[in-house]
Amino acid sequence: MKKSSKAGSTLVFVILTLGALYTLFPLGMALMNSFKTNGQLLLNPMSLPTSYTLDNYLRTWEKMHYLRSLGNTVVLAGAGVGLIVLFSSLAGWKLNRTKTRLSSVLLSLFVFSMLIPFSSIMIPLYRVVLVLKIKNSLLGLALVYAGMGVSMAIFLYHGFVGSIPLELEEAAAIDGCSSLQTFFWVLLPLLKPITATIVITNVLWIWNDFLLPLIIISRNQSYTLLLSTNTLFGQYSSDWTAILSALILAAIPVIAFYALFQKNILKGIADGALKG
Amino acid sequence: MKTKSQQNRTLLLYVLPALAVYTVFKLYPAISGIYYAMTDWNGINPGFSFVGIQNFSEILNDRYFWNSMGFTFKYVAAMVVLANALALALATAIESRRKVKGLFRTVFFMPNMISMVIGGFMWMFIFTRVVFHMADHWGWAFLDQSWIGDPSYSFVAILLVALWGSVGYLMIIYMAALQGVPGELKEAAWLDGAGPWQAFWRVTFPLIRHALTVCVFWTLNASFQVFDVVYTLTGGGPGRATQVVALNIYEEAFKGNVRFGYATAKSTVLFLIVLAVTVLQVQSMKRREQTL
Image (cartoon, chains in turn orange, brown):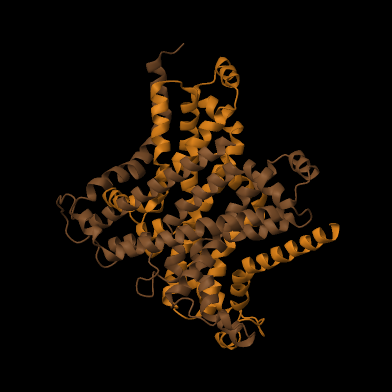
């Protein structure tokens, strides 16, 4: 009995290791080959580089306007998430604290649309963007993300506020805090755990979203990292050393983010899904 | 004490910013879409006119649309089963480890950090360059296929990449649920003579059913809308063999035809199908959660 469970445990370990290798394989291959010359890559894509070259990185750094694309993505994700957090915490808080017909109607209005797939609103949304003249505008796009993201965030804030005792707000009111002051000084610090979850899930969503920017942003100056990468892929059709270095460059920021905040990210993902 | 109408006024003030962006960028597009779906609006003429249900009757005979729908259903079914089975198996296996738990979790989740656009291009490299090297030099002849060019293999390729990109996410959710199962219950099952297999299905599984509901819902939703993987890997080809619905709609609207009205009608059909499927799924799975 003991022996067979030990063998089973080893088998599980081996399978997990193989799975982990499969998971890392494309990343490793991309990294390894991004340092090769085209000749080396054609000869053998699976060997370590015989000599390391940074030429590919230098080429693609310029070609994809790396810093500009990165900056655009940071602005987009920062503004989008900032708006979502601010708008949703204000709304979620009051929706929970106000016990009227209107508040339950509003809450269901926000929640009901969570089922609508993006591809179903994509084209009418494109028209709204044209009419408001915010095509190619990063801040305009951040507003669009806010509009699409508030539902889930309000739902989470609304639930979380329920666990905060009302007495704290009443005490603040007695001490002479206005409603807004109470919100910023008393509530917002207490909402930190759920805010972390909301920030993480929304940063990842906006950072990695492709279809919406693909439709809204057509001007090179406003390209996000993914749009630049996509364009570069089209231009370099089969110059794989260049493409792979661009892919690594595009992946570095999220990998760094992951390395820094891994614990919070994994917790945020689980909380966002199971408590939502 | 404040009156109800005063309370409502304050409430509206606080909800207003969220309500404004939500109405403009989500609610209005969703509702106006129903109207645009009944027009001949396109990207060429400035005006458009109401055409009633003409777009919808055209959809009925749109072979390409239904082919893409069929392919999407095939993809959804495969993803719901495979992604969840794999994620649950991984979560259970990793949870049973003590020392290397954190490391495996880190590695398996990593692809979820990266956009599927980047992941898709990386895999494109694997499928067009690396596998042939493996087939030639390692004698792995089964790899010697046209992974991107042959529709039946490109379906497998798309699945391999999509699973690579989503299993880690589901695994994290299953792991969180597994951590909520009290250890005493498992021990009690062991003491009662249950094997690990039996203990899992009789004790653990019923207790993580809520996570299964959430994960299946997520997989359904995400898979019906799949775009990035297919766009980067095959672009819907060869021909239209691997075209998914989202890509079909995107191309109808933004490539070549620019038939916005017709594409919106298609997206309405997609919405109704996704709605029907997810409502059925949540209802039936919630009911099973409760009977336990």
